[in-house]
Length: 317
View 1 (cartoon, one colour):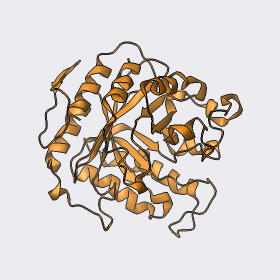
View 2: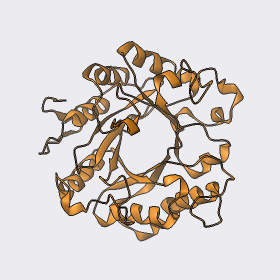
View 3: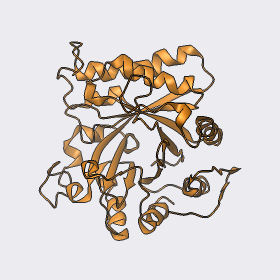
């Protein structure tokens, strides 16, 4: 997808990168930064990935203060230093590591939170490996405002998969404390004094304890027909879920995210946004791309269609 060259309007800054780095990201951020008061739910939009490049995603928030986020994903799916067989050295990145680091600094300087991706592998990795991956972003020179922890395991009291004898809850709480307690003691100028941890279990957790192990929680990730329960597949009953009957409503909507894929039309985008308040959800991402990665779809590394993308921007105003 090709976008015109754009600059931030407020404040003024231009982002231009070579090797097919689309400027749609800059366009979206410009519209968020210059927009008026927020709607009930904001859009969590644009992603970009080329072979060997990180993924950047921005998120607009649900409150009256707009704080876009950018999610950075290393090309080895977040396993930066732990010997993953698909590890791609940063020296092989194109555009270069230096270009991505510079962009993270530019975005951060404009008040945009830079969130770095790590893969928890459902606790099948030792927690220290994920901590090392977090630290590596700072070693490489990125501006870091927090982390997106993917593949979060279900079951707060279930045993973790790394053989350590701890529980899922303790595993993720340890990781959360590492970000909020340990990393700030390094006094690294590139690390936020108020970091954000986004956990992605992809569904509503079994107990409210999960909210003590994250700052934002992805409580739905999947296709639209599952989101609406029209196919009878997984996450049955999501749309019939009564917010007043769950622990989710004990927290502000700004702490919850829905990622909805396989969205076929702009009217569907409207429906998702208009229904967000009833689900107590403050962040949304919608895309027409399939979430079936096993079939070869690159859900978050493929641009949404122009119409879906434009409607996301329109709904974020």
